[in-house]
Image (cartoon, rainbow over all chains, first blue to last red):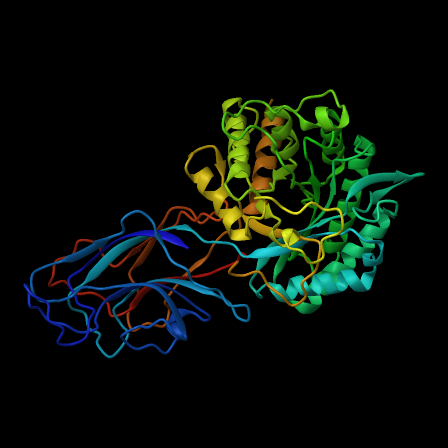
Length: 443
Length: 81
């Protein structure tokens, strides 16, 4: 977490008898300022001075004066932002404590007051594991239940995360809408099948974590011919139905929300087709009652330094004639009111973060919509590892940001340009492979 | 026009609510004497940023002033992962 502070005290917080020239006032553990985490409310903890960084308190910051009774008020002001690492725990609630403690024994009285101001600035999120759904054999309720359970185990009881399941290519078979999987490309899974699997996923999550909250985002990419308005509408209908089931389940209501998601990448399709899919989704998605929002977890592929409009790679690769612009990226990510950006911030040297800064800056400059709010940041560190990677998938080259690194790249670059966008809320890392009973903290 | 404005505001609020759970600060209720804590700023999260400012103790009091024996503290149950 990050904070700034200005603290003042007439009192001391040091070992009795500590030399403190030139004032030579009284000493002892009297008044302390601290920032800490604990698993129960601070006043229920059995504490004694001096406070230490051990159970029941995880101490990130501690300050007090050197003497009292000397006519001298000591002050401490943060130089810039203070950043401390306080590791949350999975098995209990975590309380963030901002404290001026004048009561903890053995030394406590009414004398020599202290005061101060602490301004919080930031609290890091935890990272969830998203994944590609690439194989036909993975499409079973048991598998999805296990995946959901693993996500539940990875989050603390008080946790809240976003998990994206990327089902691959939009597809239409006869009258049915659905997907072709990323690896088993010929296999068609309908929205009805995906809906059942998503329910199993939520069942598994709920079985393994009785309190944490989850945004489950079901995604496709913007590749191939089925990226159409009709497919977007069908996808939104599926998301609506899942959210209606959540509303009908008292154990799920308030904990779970299902979102639509699209991995929209300029090199994969035309802006017109992608816009139509997003428009179709928006036409049907019930935002007000069900909150069936859409995440764009795609890329920008724009010039990260100059911010010039995107020259689409699609033209070179697929003979597509349309060129993407920043307006297109803003439109499919934010401007419709139904959608949020959840960008891929893969590049280890901040290239992708700079691209999305330019998108956000363009949005404000061109007055397309209110300033962007980044729902989260997606990294692919796990997908870049060898394990589970399908044959033919290119190894990552400088695009294997660790989750917190990607998250912080986006956060810091937005913070350095005030007024352009609000920083990301969630962090997720995508994988081809499922890590059961594994969590992503500290990466 | 008013309807469009209403829809726009409602939509913006709904979208903000999707991202911005309120934070609830708690102060000591079992201390020997009441805590001296005040808050300013907003408890809405913008991203993961919190803009809350906590004022601990009574500011600018003289050396010989009296201060409640208490935990002048606030604790926040962290909601997000």
